Image (tube, rainbow, N blue to C red):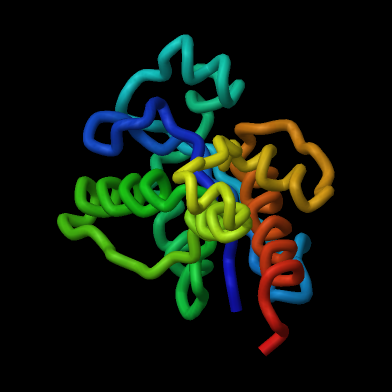
Amino acid sequence: PLVALDFETTGLNSLQDEIVSIGLVPFTAQRIYCRQAKHWVVNPASQLTEDSIVIHQITHSDIGRAPDLQDVLSALLHELAGKVVVVHYRAIERDFLYQALLQRLGEGIQFPVIDTMALEKTIVSRQRSLKDKFFGFTPRQSLRLPDARQRYNLPAYKLHHAMTDALATAELLQAQLAYHFRQN
C-alpha cells in the first residue's frame, strides 16, 4: 500500500518554516482511495508571510481556528504506518516532517519515499536521443508537478492545496508506472 503525502508550508526552509496544511491520499498502483483521503490545516508556530499566503491561499483566519500540528500527529503517523510514502520532491515532506517531530517529540523520523520528481528526472534523462547523449545535450524539461503530469495527459489541477497535490502525485506515480514499467 502507498500513501501520497503533501505539505503546504510557511516557506521552504524546514529549519525555520512550519507546516501549514497536510494532505494524504492512500492508493495502490491500480486504485486511489479518495474516500480515505485526509486533509488538515494546522496552526504553525511561525507567522505566515505574504508570499506563502499568495501561494497556498491559507490565511491567518484559517490557521487561527486550526489545531497545532501536535494535535494531528498521532492521526498522521497512523495513516502513514505500514505504507510507502509517495511525494513529489522528497526534501520538502521528509525534512519538514522530521523537523516537526523533532520540535514536538524530541526525535525525528526517517522513512523511505518514492519521489515522483526524481523518478521523472530519470525517465526524462533516459528518453534523450543517442545524438543528444553523444554531444552532451541535456534537454531542459520541467520536473514541476503540473509539467510532469502534462506529459502523461493527466488533468490540470489548481496547485498548492495539500490534498489536491497529494492526489495529483498519486495519479502521476500511477501514470509513470503504467507508461514505463512492467506490471510486475
